[in-house]
Length: 243
Image 1 (cartoon, one colour):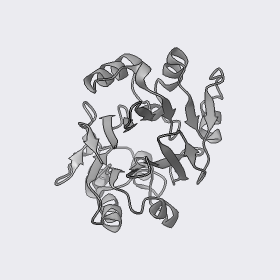
Image 2 (image 1 turned 90 degrees about the horizontal axis):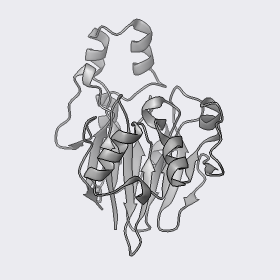
Image 3 (image 1 turned 90 degrees about the vertical axis):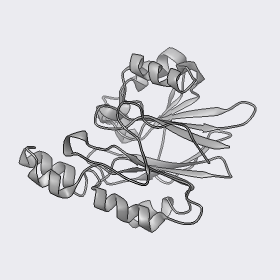
Image 4 (image 1 turned 30 degrees about the vertical axis):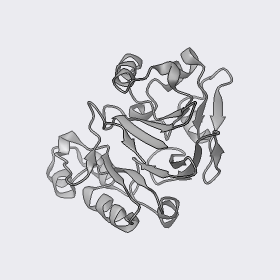
């Protein structure tokens, strides 16, 4: 059985748990953009503790995604996957042998859980989003990008669940008090997905086997909202969702 749970999603911090069930469940933390104490509290709410995490995958170097990843990894001896570009962008810190390099379209076999990283258009050095499968069910994670390329869409075909960025309303962004450069960054092709763009992606990826659609990385400042889907909010994320 595959299940997942957002621990929080938004500009204040992003982290998602993915668990492949079995006699010895394997637990992956995708992004770690919270303080280490806050992460511990949210793991506790999910019935876990930091030592229960078997691996960490970092999508890119922005603070709301990488957060306490290094401290957590070193404290609990957890392997960390990220791209070479992401590692370089953070100053190439030493992970004491725990660092593993992730590459576009190169599968990562973690035993009971297989990952497929894929490149996306975002304003960082070498961002990767990913899909996860236990062989029976597939979860797609797509939280930070300005637009979806055909390659991105191909990687997310036939997912049983999607965690999908729905960051802003285009009109509200244009009318906001954000400075012009920030409006351009957020709404640009290497920024964040608008609600409209996210809906188009979700529509193109919808099929009879899609069980869960989770709206992630919502912008509270721009008054985003979603209906008929699960919302991963900044404070509490989501409950466990099973596939």
